[in-house]
Image (cartoon, rainbow, N blue to C red; front, side):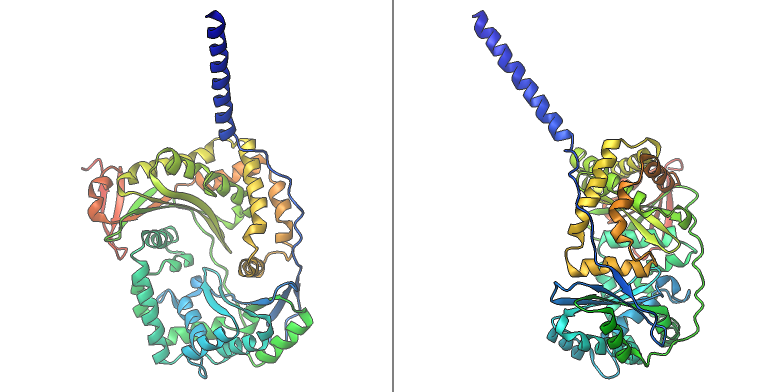
Length: 480
């Protein structure tokens, strides 16, 4: 009997220890794996051709496809104050039709060369991206040349694109995430040129031919542009072909005014914007930092720790632990004049108040408590290990290459990515977290107000906006 009891006790003790070991194993991430040296193709850049257009090539002879990206150094911050969104209008019109090709003709041509065309207008610049089979480089350059040299800015074309964009915005304004982000940008950059990026569909009525022509005439110039080709091509051949199709593009004397510094908010603010019929709520928290605090590598590590993946602090807290959120992530967004640190979450309406409280708790914690070395190492390991996966596709790789020229970084910027991440010490990472999250944040919640009236009353103070972004009232708990 005693022997049986002793044996049972030993078995139980071993089982408990085994379970404890399993639990520790689950909680402690494995050590980072060794990384392979990063060797990316070199960006070769020729002297500007006769009209000032810069041409770069990233040679990838193993691919049957090519990517062409034309960067125009004029983004939404350069739109007229009276007509925000003009930069987006210009990019869409240029890429849609020309004086000699209709929209349907362009679509057919792009399909025939196995291609795709997209436009992206950001705060500081605009990018036209053209992917196609490498046998059709001449056709792609010819089409792009027609778009730039012979755009269709007729009233009919403008009206057509305005209608398309307005319908697109009507559809996107049903999405709480889109609405929350746009409203966050408007409030964070109120009075700053970057705030124009938050324009709504109401801005469409102010778009006109005069502003469009002035914007295009000023910014769509060869000496204010950079063309990058990625694929099986040499710089000499690329420069020759680009010169052939773009030699009549006329330069213009260009003096770009620098974007004024970004000023962080002076006090914490929580806002709500109505999105009728939305089933879930979007929560967006934002803080901004000036160019003097611009440290992409450190901020990338901070973002990875806070909300980079499903294993990060925000996701584990709001989704795995509390079951408040569908997701919760963070990211650092960089501009010429500084940057934005963004936290975003999708939550059920009944959990908006505790979700905001947990997000604020996590952002304050990462700014006030030193980060464990093990957590930093895991974040670095993920960033380094995931980078080759990020750039596997030609389109993603080309986008990274174009960022170098768009943000005017060193040509070997991405080749030094591993080194930049590995050499960041804990003190520098903690300093980046403090600079990002010690300033008061702005929080925007977007959802269906009819489902949330009682939930909004849980906040000490909250600004309430209608679906068009117009302030309706400020709910103050003390006054209630």
